[in-house]
Image (cartoon, rainbow, N blue to C red; front, side):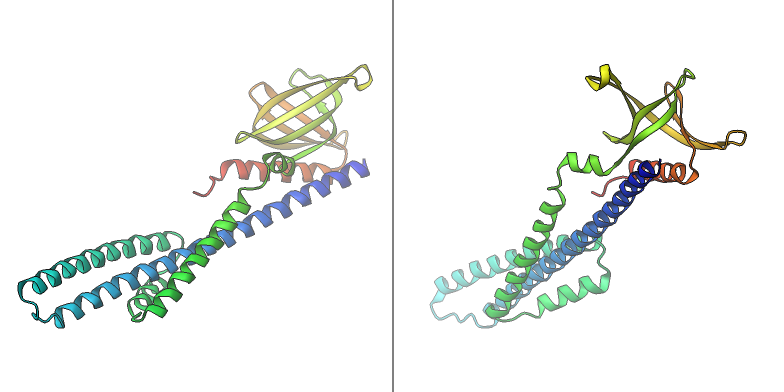
Length: 263
């Protein structure tokens, strides 16, 4: 019983550590995406600012040296500069909204826009472009790492299993290998039974909808009751710590099931 309790506790600790690592990776990914959005906002603002500056320069310094042809060419270039400036301003707004949706405050967005608009030289523009590209690559790399975890490994981390005395809805009581885990966004209780010395194995699954605890004072045992569509399944423990471990783990699985995934 001590070995089973130790193994169960180690599995629970592994589950909690995995959950903390997952949260840390999510925060890193969100931070990287936020930085990428701010960099793109700065780049779009820089393009808009450069286009506006170019347009003004052409307006102020467009001599009519070559008559109508020169005037026509200047007008065409002026129109193109205005179009590029308007498009860049639109992209800036979109990037700013994306940054705010990822957690950026107004001061951060304003700083990105102002720094972009202040850019006046090609060298600065190249630097801003390189920074945005680096941020995008970093966010993409973190996202690929987050989605590269095999499904089988995730399922192994999000389950708890042991040999436990089980009381089925029919009232039948026996020792069985039982496992509680997440499957297709549902919390599932599964028990396995061996036949012919383990040559054959059967398993059956029950979807769990609730959990409760009660104590049999006359026997000193602890019951973890799992509510399913087929009735109440009871897990019988002689040790209070082991029952607490199972209850804590199952409640955490319930929390994962009820918490929506981030978009």
